[in-house]
Length: 467
Ligand code: B12
Image (cartoon, rainbow, N blue to C red):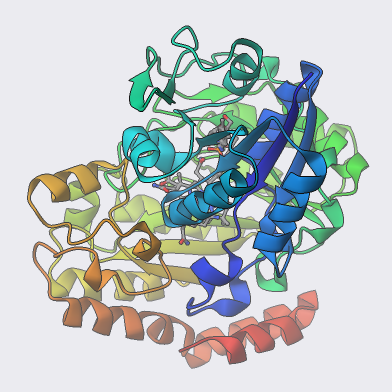
């Protein structure tokens, strides 16, 4: 049986160190992709260890020691776009110790640009899309064209096998994620984005039917697949048994099937499971109703984040979000009425925007008046329609993936089609201030956080923010 080491590259300092809202940044977020892959490998009898390099201050040394001590046959690395150069670096450290180790990468960035990843690094193989069963197949059969969805090096050439989409139809077939391989007590988040620690991520569905041009769909695709109600609550039960005290659902669209979401809440209550949770991946404003929000609250959900993106209907239509401002207003009002904390996400600098749209977005956030808002400057990421469109129009200025990091202004990355960077930066710089520095808001949050015991952590977050 093979020995496998799975790596979560360190991103905490590099990706988030320039974040405006540093107090909301978490060091430990459960690497769900890796625990899913680990579960299948363990089921097949292999020895698996997960190294989360965020949890150490000396990631290189920590990795080198693990390679020398464990002598793995395979190393698997997960990567998004801003992490890919880190993955290249880790892979060269591994090869410097032992060239014979097969290094496999997966995740959003390698799935979008598999051939580039192989050309630019010493990595041996890229798995495109869902990797749950593919890693085990590679271990069993070696790198070969008979295994779907892989790109690999063969005598200096890049070879690809046949590519299928959405290969896992029934998510209940997946083994339970191997959270037990993690040092669970190290996973916690700041108090403004969690209630209890340790905190674990859970997925209850995969895919999203939305066609938003800024979203990467290379992994889970457009076809929604959902775990059954009992499977979801079994997983929650198991996570609580392992020691997690809060659960955050990372689905792209937890309430796609509102009846299933309702039934999950009923089942949580029927089993008398008491824990704080919320769908942190965000909810579409057209996929909630009063009945659902009320039962979510009763079942322990404490917050609802909505992806609204813009306060300009014209821009919402351009980016393919297919929601209306009225739906957004209604959803936020209903969530407040149900007693849930509300959070709204907005993007500034979306394609086609003019200065008036930036103003409208900030004004709309104030009108909705949720408990929290997050503004981010739009970044075209590989694997999105926005990136492909900008590439074909010659707007992309660099493919230095280290710079594709949401914490810094993307002015070096691309040319905006209708706005100057001076204007986008100006509105980004005032956006959070315009929302948060309102006397009515500050008073509301003072009393709210005093009542729920989070006043001090909110005050700390406020002081640590780079307004
Ligand atoms: C939770 C989450 C986070 C968490 C944790 C990140 C993490 N790496 O787990 C936090 C909040 C830290 C985060 C941060 C960011 N995120 Co994020 N995040 C997600 C989210 C919502 C869920 C990820 C997840 O756990 N999915 C469930 C698991 C099962 O799927 P998975 O991780 O993709 O793993 C599967 C496959 O990818 C593959 N696989 C993955 N790794 C490996 C490794 C090997 C060896 C193999 C064989 C296969 C394999 O097999 C797995 C099982 O099928 C996704 C959207 C989504 N629905 O997936 C976005 C997503 C991954 N994030 C994204 C982005 C942009 C970011 C940020 C850059 C944003 C920012 N603020 O700067 C940062 C980057 C920092 C980082 N750590 O990478 C984009 C990535 C796009 C891109 N081109 O890279 C996504 C896809 C959202 C989107 N739709 O556009 N994120």
